[in-house]
Length: 98
Image 1 (spheres, rainbow, N blue to C red):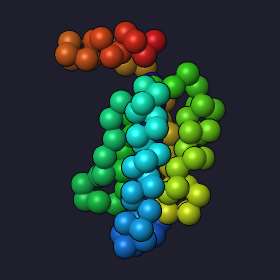
Image 2 (image 1 turned 60 degrees about the vertical axis):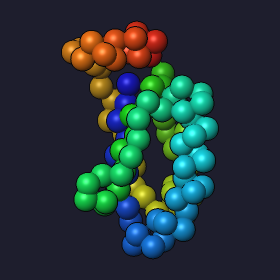
Image 3 (image 1 turned 90 degrees about the vertical axis):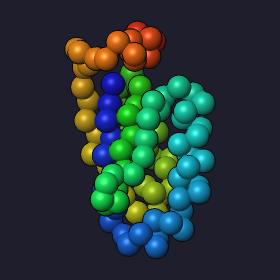
């Protein structure tokens, strides 16, 4: 399991220029069951994506498709973690992710 933290490198007006294309990118990976949750940080300095992937390399390959990456709008910090405790409401998601 991975958490990807995005930090915007450009002003929000430039982020907004590519937000629809970025959401299409997100939608593709939700359909493939790779993304579990995503959204903007508060305050809006970047975003967060929770990713169900087999390896860091897979996450990096996915990120390469993001228009925010292509346009150098965001920097990506990939954090791998092993969920050892969780709320029972998401057990079925974590079991499928293994």
